[in-house]
Length: 123
Image (tube, rainbow, N blue to C red; front, side):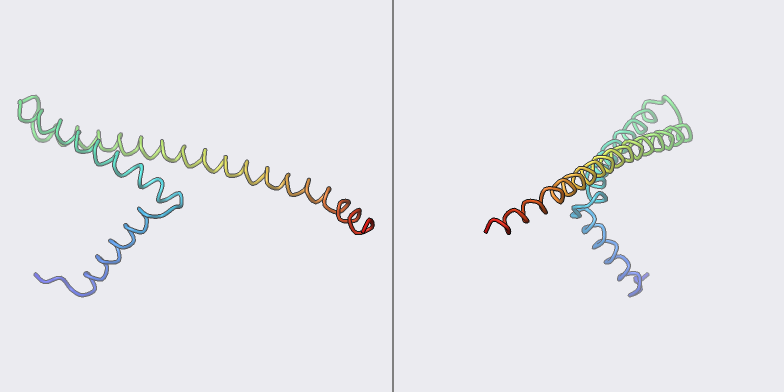
């Protein structure tokens, strides 16, 4: 079955957007660069554990599938919560920096006008 041109375009665009997200300097890029490797490795370990358990006869396919699904839900949910907290901490730190910068600007404005007046009147 041939792939339609619209499907090809969507596939190319999704690959380009994934690459741009990975290369992004913003918070989305930071999260994906940290989350993706962890998710891949952990899910591979879960899959291997499921396969070994079934191979050794500890449980059947149905139980293995349930364990794998629950494990994936907990792992991905845990990673998402961890990185949501990480983003919140970064946003709070950014807010503190913005506040400190505003305070510095206000202090500068209080000192700038008298200094300029003194300089203009003395020269």
